[in-house]
Image 1 (tube, rainbow, N blue to C red):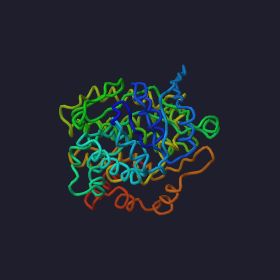
Image 2: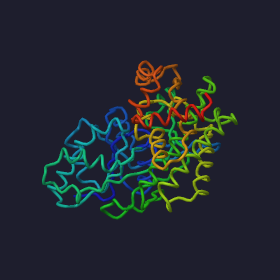
Image 3: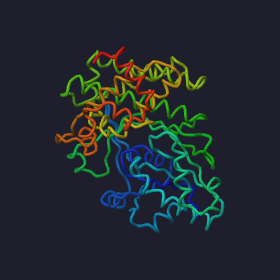
Image 4: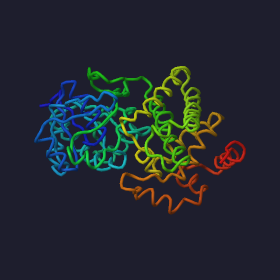
Length: 395
């Protein structure tokens, strides 16, 4: 029997716990987390609740109830849970998606076998462009040729704007489930992709043109976040927190100008979807959120994973390419890219990620290779970038 008020959430990490699980639990859903980390799954099943700590001057504790966990090694159980769910979500991070697709495909087959063409909606709580197309392609490879994928699953793209900082080891050791988060609690998602009625839950914000809102998140929020980390680090290697960086008026102005330049790109790409004054207000609001010192968000968290964040369709290269498409200026955004190549912030133990070590070992002295091999710019685009570097950017 399909349990309409049950959501399956792949990933009991930061976004799964603090955002998706929290929203649906408070919307009277049973929340079933699927995760690879057994201690978290065991703790979910022991307590059946956890706390989300909203970090502001006046700290707030949200007690999230009616939750449980299933370990991903319990393959048959995961498939059965998915097949009988009212709705599902994925929040494992881009690097973990390959491990999720087999569960979803087998779950869809079992759902079809037992319940017929009763579709399930899957909220893709990942920061990636064209996530619906990617999921459709990957699932299609695993499903039988005759399987009615288009009528069995709604692939719901989202724009994830909630900021969840890395927690220190001492806080994690005290409570495996407790998590810190900011007050922002709006989940923007694709209104048109749902196969079933959209759940009536506070915090869900369905949009008609989700591509525009995904790009707004990527080119303003993600780009702005990156700009704080990368420009901040290049300005002073001793900066640790975002609020420290943004207290520097010169850095603040550089970040603001990069975000403003990105907003002009959005206005050209999506005429009628956004208004200039609304995007400026959004930028100003984000810069206030970035300065939330109670959140304790670090340059290390925001800036690490350089190969992904400098990728061809990601926040920086994606914005520059779109600017080029519309013959718009991109010098302020390019400055963020230049600073990114020098970024080497460390965690609380003085370490940088293994992937970032590999990045610096291979590319630290070869900016052209970064542009071509990491960012995916073609020869003509690289020529244009080098021209802007010479004419516009003071290094």
